[in-house]
Length: 172
View 1: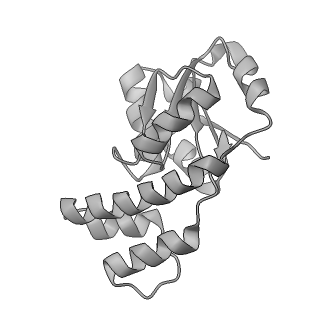
View 2: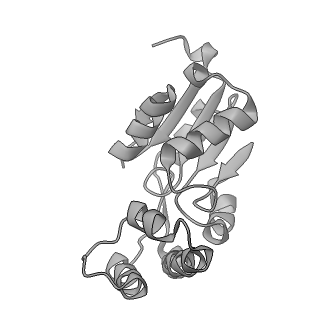
């Protein structure tokens, strides 16, 4: 890996990485199943994206279901025990946030993080992690090789690989 000093930007994922938002997924999936008239037990975001891409009203209604589930979980939010260490380690580097959460819940979580982000990209911009990362990198004019993306899922790692930035998986 290149020297730490070549790092210009750290992009963080939110849920599962910096915080744990204990969403009642069964309840949320039940509402999404009814909205889309599906039989599947789980309704992943890629399905929401596919089914709402050409229907803004349906997308708004699906996002409202997601937002309601997130807001209900907010009182039980947990901060990553390594948050302080992450803040210190990356203090001198520009930071950005990408998330599949909506802006309402993100705005409530931000004060808890005690971090300043140059840009925040929520699901309203895109439900595709690589697209979110590309947007942040383009907006901040940084070379992907000088970017570290910190996430918690394999999909996060794939997104980082797809755009050519470094990846660090974080656990609890």
